[in-house]
Length: 269
Ligand code: URA
Image (tube, rainbow, N blue to C red):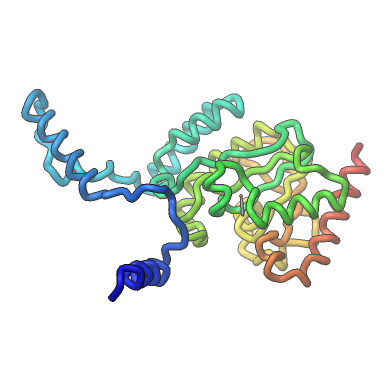
């Protein structure tokens, strides 16, 4: 096999294995990295450590928290944040969601915290993960156009996601990942105090409305987000723009929803 054919075969193998993008220019030899960590840990032990750490422990990351422990930590840490900056710092430091290990960036929010509308999507995709900003990829660009159609500029809204870290390969978030991050989102909503919540896609709608129905049943009507404490917030579920990119015929349903949102904003001002 020629060198080019060998490289092509290797790339084909990566694609078949589900690798859908590169995350850096230089290759990382993780075996060497883990081994050097283990070597340094062993040297440090010989010099001073009273506790004996096995090589395996030294070379592996700390164990992930159990789901209940992660949720409890998240609740305590999120409740202690009294500003958005504090919440962002605390959330970024939170170790209870394993997606943090695989994502490139922490994606907190974008837009104006004084906005009347707060949008909540599912999780960052590839473009969002690279830039650290929500809804900047193809779905985000479509969302911007849909908003422009009702006279709203992206800078006039506030936007975040259920999860701040990208699930590998854009897979669906697990219940455990959502549960670990939800206390931060609940606090996020309480600090922003939006007039209207726009729940973008089924995961966002089901999670925040605590409903089992799919997005097709949840969209098309006004509902309430009921926080554990504080007043309910009017909420409207929208089909996810990533779905609309693939199914443009459904855009008319979202158009109807957006007109309802526009009318409600106009009535209330
Ligand atoms: N889809 C989402 O739900 N959120 C993003 O930030 C990007 C795509």
